[in-house]
Image (cartoon, rainbow, N blue to C red; front, side, top):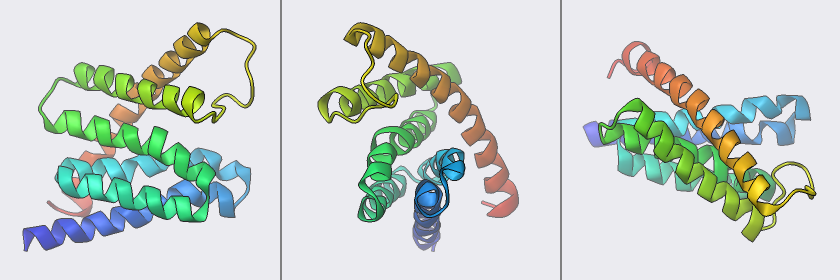
Length: 167
């Protein structure tokens, strides 16, 4: 029974993550800040069960890629991987600051791959600064993003777990 419950929650969280991530595609660009919320369902299901969380991450990313490749890349390399790393490191009973640092490293590496290997411009075009400065800028953004999302996701997880799903 417990596996079915987690699988159902995983499917629901997958649908919510896809919905949040593709909002800017179907609505105007004003809905762009709402796409950041796609991190919360993946974080939630990964905190409950790491295996189902990883499956929800892959399924969400593939569904988003079918709708729009642009948002799919952002999900796979930014929002989704941040949720997955924050939740996985938190499940391993690490301190909050260590979870944020490790998640920052994972996010920085994935953003560097996205920016330099795939050629997806993160900051809206070709910056005339060197690769070192771009990398430091990406590291800074990843650190701030990990801090904010780490605390927001944990706060949301506690509310959803106790009050909504009563787990």
